[in-house]
Amino acid sequence: MYLSKNGIFTDALLIHSFVEALICTHHNCGGLIMSEKKIGEVMKFFSKPSVAAVKITEGELAVGDSIKFSGHTTDFTDVIESMEVDNKSVPKAVAGDFIGVKVSDRVRPGDEVFKVIPD
Image (cartoon, rainbow, N blue to C red):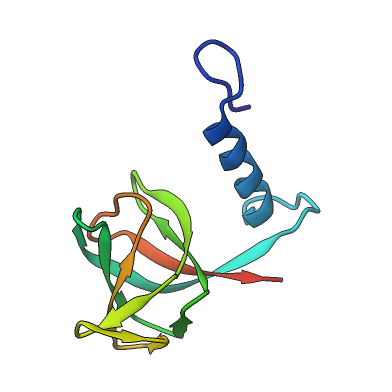
């Protein structure tokens, strides 16, 4: 359960619980399960304007795709609103590309990047 220190659910915790239930890949929970496919790795993080430099190691990504960042202290999912290759906006990226993508939270070099795929 996700409770705040005073025993009351907070909005952020409720949202986190809901998102976990939607993209759960750890249990056979019978809900709306989505799979994840490793697509790359974080190379660098720029705190202003909160951009991750990601090396695409396999597959492809497109604007509108959902991606999950996972590491020792990183675990969140974002939707790609825009991405750049060599400071130019692109609609998609393929294996071998280094992309810049805005993120909602801090990521760290070495964090894994997964494409979230609806089943």
